[in-house]
Image 1: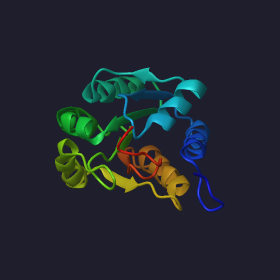
Image 2 (image 1 turned 60 degrees about the vertical axis):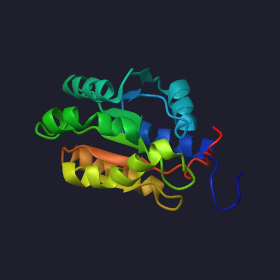
Image 3 (image 1 turned 180 degrees about the horizontal axis):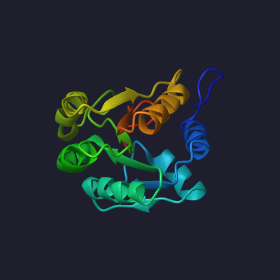
Image 4 (image 1 turned 135 degrees about the vertical axis):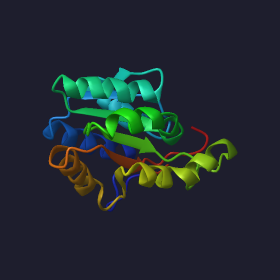
Length: 175
């Protein structure tokens, strides 16, 4: 529910996509995720979204898009991020491919499903081990975090991750 102090999931999704439009993000690739559903819908209706069968495929597609002059963005769950470690470690990082990854943090906060809790506890350390910088989007700073990500990809020519907790988009376990 929206209040004077916070945006709804739909409002946040629109604002995020508007910022990505202003930043010139030109290709959006994703593997579906319930936590990110409002963001997926907004991208799908306003920009177009390419669905990938697996997260490592989505990252590989983003690498190709970058080589073709696009500014790619990949959306995924943290379980798929873990499945993508090889393509990140052997392609993205050594060749400084500046993709932006939006990663939902399943197994954290209100998502207490046992099958997601291990990945929920490991995501930050895997990003740290890979040397990928990241920020967790928060109600009061998410727009500035999108600008931070743009700087990291465009000036430092590196991949970044924007992490989304289940609470950020008001996700509930029944979804």
